[in-house]
Length: 219
Image (cartoon, rainbow, N blue to C red; front, side, top):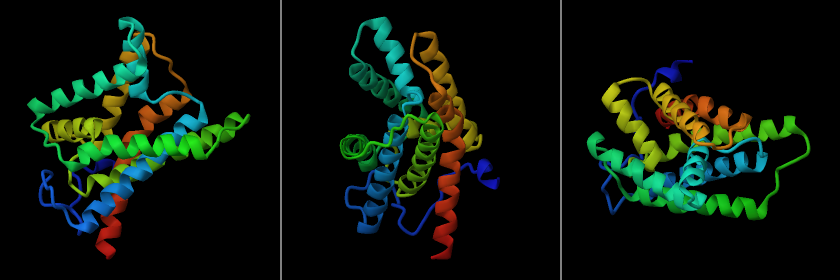
């Protein structure tokens, strides 16, 4: 369980020397796209499982209900708000910040169009949702080590970790649980999958980073 104590994004053979790198190596770009694709597919599995919305979607739904916005616009507003929080945290964006939004959204849409993993068995749906959380964590571990800039929420995680010096797993869990709590108070829909994601994504991301670091050492 040493991975729960990990505090930094590992530097790998494919890591960029800086987030604002507009001419990254092919290997760096490959791992960025590969990680984001796994991330997006993991997100789609949680949707397929139909056992609850992700924490940030619960938050967006709560805002949408109270302000009479669409969930899509509320989600966009949340992303902009998170990016604004980056300023005092001195978090740097990069190519990965932009590709995060495009690739994850595209992978989710493609997965929802091509596959149907939902069943009438709640137990199987729970397994599908759990696998989704694990894949999101693994995908995060792969794309973050490219060091081409995190997505809005991952940037909040790494920024707060740097300021607080707490392990990544606990920083991410704290963020997700806080977001779920506020979203639920605002009227957002919370399910077992929501709690599974909120409490599981921190350890999953930490495991993904630990796994990537171990694999990199062997190469």
